[in-house]
Length: 138
Image (cartoon, rainbow, N blue to C red; front, side, top):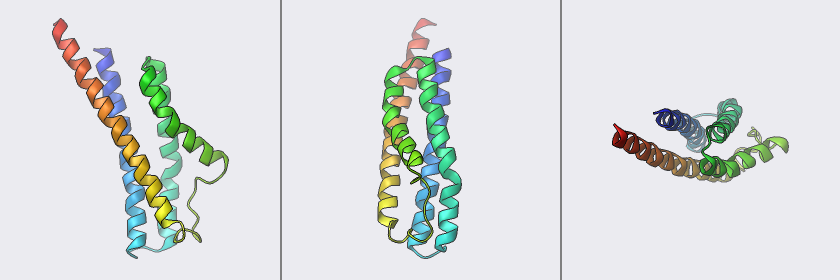
């Protein structure tokens, strides 16, 4: 039963990460369609960058602590990419360059979204498998 709670917690962490990335994509789309100005768009995105990185780190550490090594290893490339951006100080969106980098920023977030959706489906699969195994013992 404890393993089921681990998968539920990871499910909600992944959902929160997906919501953060979709929020960033919506801010970029609003900028592209000229609904908001570049300053507002970049400030909205920059406010959620560090919470995204911290949440991903917590998820990877959570999988590592609970003994789900494969899922932890699947989280490592995303965590490494975020850490590399942060250490190079390339993690924040620049107001003056946001129009020039708009397509790159959108592609980057779409790739992150796809990666998180794959992790979410794997987490759902393992959650269902764990629930079925727990029901077999009852």
